[in-house]
Image 1 (cartoon, helix red, strand yellow):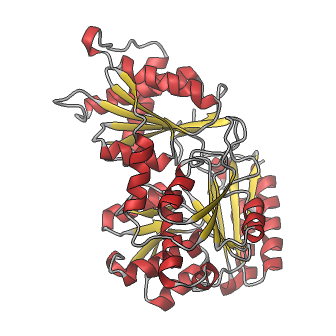
Image 2: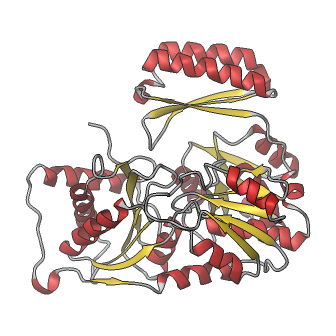
Length: 452
């Protein structure tokens, strides 16, 4: 039986893989594990619970709230808010844990449960393992120790969370955004209200798309994984730039005035130089992942900024940042962590800081992003394979070795199992896009043949 917790919580098809019973059981288990770890000692425990607008989030939220309250935890239900908002409020309200219900950029039928520790930080792997072990033992029949009477948790809606989070975002900006027109694509997700409101309060003229969630349309043709509508809208409205979020708004991609994509590596490059100029880039270091574009690495070296690379996943970026005190890190996908102001990737904050840099310098986004040349990179997802064998297959290793010989020093190859989906990701980087596509296609075929 595989591990329930992936790189970003527990995910699956709602009501099939991730059921109400599982959500309830995991929440009760989390409460017991944190209590045993001493998190609740000396006070009545409190949890912050939020969700994205997926229809399944309604019954999963009810299950999580029921589980926590039945375990003696008071619940502040913040409703539909971004993942980083739940993390921020968990810290700001001095809550003992936070719970976010979302499957991020995944399609609507999926959902997920993510736990935050005190302060709004992601749970350590060890605690997740203990929660899973506890959940499984009780799912098989072991009875819970349940409080009664005044010991049960109380539940209330915390409607103030929206304004508190938006005020936090606007309050950390180094300058206002007056004079800029920005198109916001909310992916019909958790940022549909928050992001336009924050940009407007900061002074920008805001045009919105993908901001009408109905529970069924999250990530459907909008958001950071579907940029075409945002690109067209930026050009149509003659906007200065566009900002795209994913379903839970922990990531941000951008579009310049000509409709060209500005990815997470480019955003990191712009923010790294801005923060260094302000004396905020501790150690003159930015943290990326092994998926960071080679062009980003070369640009940072040229600018005198050190790049530290980790495994793929914003939790690993965050671990590296926290262990060495770095202030900025992120992924090509648009997960950007500014640790002085957020404990996790925050797409709205990232978009605001990027736009603030445009406003402060008077330069276009295209000009700022040109600090790095993005080398051609092809990513192919290979579904329906045994991703657990990607590192041990001799046939896959031989195919990778052949690809690396062909690319030489002008490119690189990376194969990795997805942490959230049943597939293997094949990434090829080369000086020439056609070569990258050709090599990636052959590698994808080899993976399918060897692991399918």
